[in-house]
Image (cartoon, rainbow, N blue to C red; front, side, top):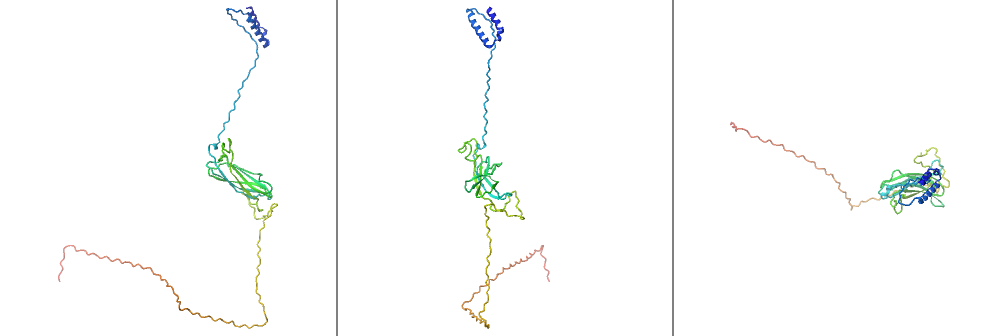
Length: 333
């Protein structure tokens, strides 16, 4: 009992403020001593042993890793339907740009697109590019000569629509020009996502390409565009052609004078001639042939139409009325 009292007092002493390592070592030592002092027998005893100490332990903080939520991908509308096909044509004309001293001209025209399929187009887009070919070189795109057309309304099945375009082009010597229009849609037949030509999942733009060659204007006149005003007849000055150009000669017709022959009388001699009477020719008498008698065709006479004779209606005769009553005697003479 004395040992337990000692240990109880020891637990409340200043050793409680010892560092944690000494507290643990002291507790282990006390337990080791108790194993030798407690009698082994059938006696049951119980005692409350209070050991206090300060133990510093760390703490693990487990933070759940946020799982990334996959973004749902919407299925494009063209995947649920069959594709369609396009046909495109274009025209190209040129005119000089006003105020550029014949150094820049305008190529203009129309690009006509037809939806030949059974479904409306999706993502219709036209890219119009001017290309040049120098005398010693290949075709190449001309810088700053590009136009993009993105219609707000799509083409219905069987619909054809034409789009106007205008592109400014610098004049260059010994250079060929052409205009290339690439028309694409996102639901072209054979180019849908997941097909042979388009693995997907993104759409593959595809469509026809049409080209039209053109040349700079051949005259020095400025043809007014849609927003330009034609020059007046007063004060028009013929503009010179660009360097390297030869104007075509206009043939002029000069009539060749024809010589007129005037006969001049020539006198063969100075002798005065006496005029002689001109002999008259005796006419040959005409003898009619008696064997041939001309046949005079009969003159047709007009037969007058017969005059209708009116039929006279006979006057009706009066029917005698028999006497009424007994017969009267005839007076005798």
